[in-house]
Length: 320
Image (cartoon, rainbow, N blue to C red):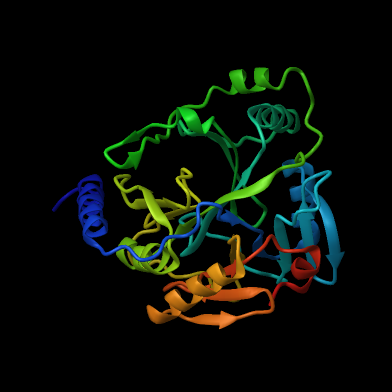
């Protein structure tokens, strides 16, 4: 019987062959970006304390059992929290659905300030150098994964045989702190955005059929064991997919802490409608909403496709 590593490599080779042979449908516009993520949490107050004190968000709006979070000096909604009292925390192995969502800081100095802040409060994040970016990894009180990262200049990214060169190397935290120039962390700075979302899925081929062939993302890294990375416009990835929860993993359910939905923002309304029609034609669930379209992947993860950055009013409504 092959080892887990050998099986992963065989799966990667098979997937690469499948992707290279598959007929490409329309791709997403190069100007595609991501909008807010919507999370279900067990205790709103507990989550807000973490998101403000540890991550450095500010509350843009709070009402009832929900809150909208943004960076300081910037009213762009980034995270919406919705309380479901007693929601079950994410188990150590994870569930199908969210692996992590990633907050992109505007520059390396901001990431260095965040490293210093986490050290001051005694937080111990994971940390990786991905060549194209430098990243910190944290887990919120419900076990939901969060990445905070900064990109390296795009001119220095290397493409080799049609794939972007990425890695998971040790991160030089001292050098990052030095990049802050002695400035202290004062919260998420203006220009902070949702950079990408990374999902646990049941099978990479099925995931590729939805996110690549129907929705329109393009693969950037195909050879990483058990994973596939996709983007629009040559970005390193707007979306990561992996099967690391293993066979038989169950999707997050209604009573679990989970990702309720994430958002893809296209430049024009007709582009959003074209994506929705393409996904619907491929046989996946699609529902119109007040601001766009809600698409559902094979494991129940919802992605909202809109044609402009969502307003506070849309985020306040829960955008249903």
